[in-house]
Amino acid sequence: MSRIRLQRLTRRFGSVTAVDAVSLDVADGEFLVLLGPSGCGKSTLLRMIAGLLAPTEGRVLLGDADITDVPPRRRDLAMVFQSYALYPHLSVARNIGFPLRARGWSRAAIREKVAEVAAALDLTELLDRRPRELSGGQRQRVALGRALVRDPGAFLMDEPLSNLDAALRAGTRAEISALHKRLGATVVYVTHDQVEAMTMATRIALLDKGRLEQVGTPAEVYDEPASVFVARFLGSPAMNLIDATVAATAAGLAARAREVELPLGIDAETPERPVVLGVRPEHLAIAGQGAEGGIRAVVEAVENLGSEEVAHCRAGEARVSVRGPRPLGLRDGDRVRLTARPEHLHLFDADSGRRLA
Ligand code: ATP
Image (tube, rainbow, N blue to C red; front, side, top):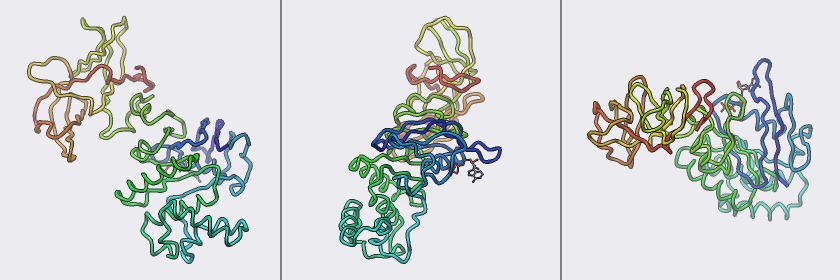
């Protein structure tokens, strides 16, 4: 059983609370990504799971065992860091086999296990090389191999791809995902890269200032962000967020601001209330001539992304971006009306930033 449970895990450094009462249940075989901006507490949380850092409060459980006070080497967890931490004077084979040698395995047993792991990671041809004779991606695979060879209960990974260039990162991302599926291993993976999180995770845990903001599948956190923070963090360009008021109109409730009137598709008695209105750039459409309502905006710049374009616009005080297939047919200075289907509108409480609908 490689289920990992965190119970109100907390770590303070002097007056800074780096991790604040985080409770989280990572199921056996899950690929859980801890995501958040720099300084949100991701690494601190991972280091407490690994046992490299003692919690100020709270417990860590692996399976049914409370491992909070168990030293790292006895935790049955393998850690993969962004710096590969390979031994430069040892061959790839000996780097991978190192944890087994330290455990007193026989040479024949080590050779067999190393060959098996090397085959899984496509490293068989490289077993005699030294780390300096490898590319960054190959080194990262060796570091993964060294973690894999121990058959640990779970893997803990701290930004393992951040030293790789973009192309290699995409390739290694796919490899780690494939490996996870093949092994069915439990993985807790730290990153600040939303693309890594969206593509690899079975669930994403978003952290802000040491607290859990939302835990859910990639689709859940993208489609129904629990707060303005989550809405802003996922998506590129970020979700458009506009200060607005929910008000009753002849056609039902609408979100209104100076340059905005978007029907919410619901009919209810409600006092006017201030909200933050959210709509993703890909969910805005450019209305035809003579349309009414929507967001009245002026195009300030159009960016070409290859297959798509993003138009950056101004709507009164607010900045609004629209994303769609190229060409969008817009030019700087154009006046447009932007519309969105009611089901694509997000409402957040103006004070707390929490999701309303
Ligand atoms: P990054 O993505 O930049 O690595 P992170 O989300 O991993 O950031 P942490 O490294 O966990 O964040 O840090 C969380 C907070 O705790 C930060 O405010 C950081 O300055 C503080 N912190 C971390 N380690 C220590 C330490 N050893 N002593 C004092 N403060 C620390």
